[in-house]
Length: 73
Image 1: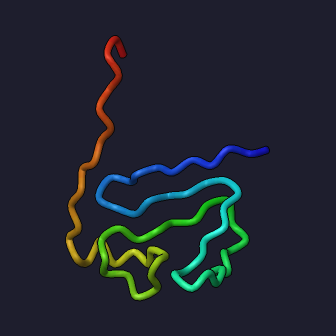
Image 2: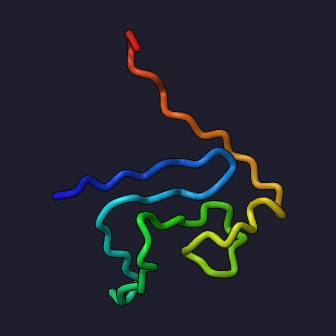
Image 3: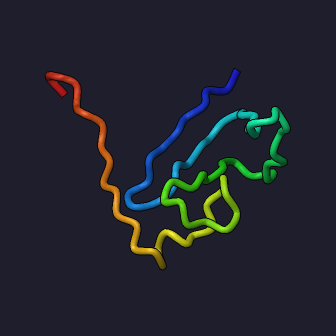
């Protein structure tokens, strides 16, 4: 089974790669594009939420989120 990976993009969306199912609060499944990955909005400005439409660039979204490195890395 393919592994799911979520990449936090610098000043951008969450990029999700792998087999996922995305459902709304009522349990309805979103139709996903037939692409290798899905970009999910984290700036709150997208007109196609929960998907990213690139509006973070216009909004000046800044989020340099980084994981804490493991000791010895």
